[in-house]
Image 1 (cartoon, rainbow, N blue to C red):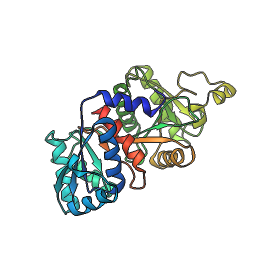
Image 2: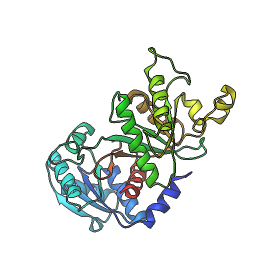
Image 3: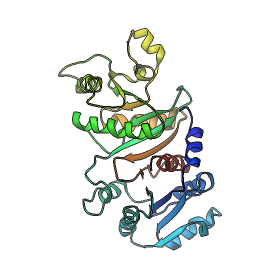
Image 4: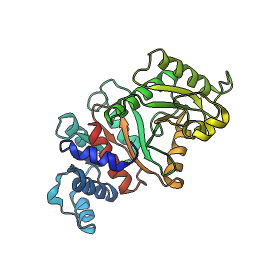
Length: 297
């Protein structure tokens, strides 16, 4: 897969999906409207009706195309949105203005959330002009300093998504600062080596994992040639596994701000896809995230 246009075409072929949004904000409504027009998504807006009507009026959006649930309390609106997904009245949960920590706390609630014993991780999918195909990045927003076992689960979540997108055996690059194992001094290199061997022996399935790899080694064939690296993943990665949230978050924002990338972002591992984007993200990023979620659901 090389562009989001391919992803949009794939989403158009699926059945109509319902997206429940708590605490609606302008960029989210613009994204939903674009998704409604392009892939037939149906939005369920849970929140302050007057606020939603004002946003719609400013942007000439006809709210008759949406289902609206009037709820003035922000956290109650979130709980009601989650309930819609749990009750199968919505296929996708999407974050509005509500803060990410509050949003995730409700999602993780053992009794009324969407986790059901699984491990959550963030998955970002990029179309980057300088790269020859789509590139995924994980985890940049949820897991702060994942352990080796948690990195296995993050890879498994990413592979599950990639398989649903049509990839047969995605190539996973385990990111570090160097391509050589540095025992005791650079734990990310040790994790990269272990994860590679685990995949080689079938402990991590349906993918090829290699690491440690520095970022240039993961995506640049020229860098791989110069350094003489022998790998099926190096220079051709489909997914980059980040060592920690600081690295992942910085890389995510650099790709968006400096590399001219288009991006979609969702939470993997829940009982339904969750669109979790930054409040600062544009409606284009939010729209593409809905597209991705609609395929995964």
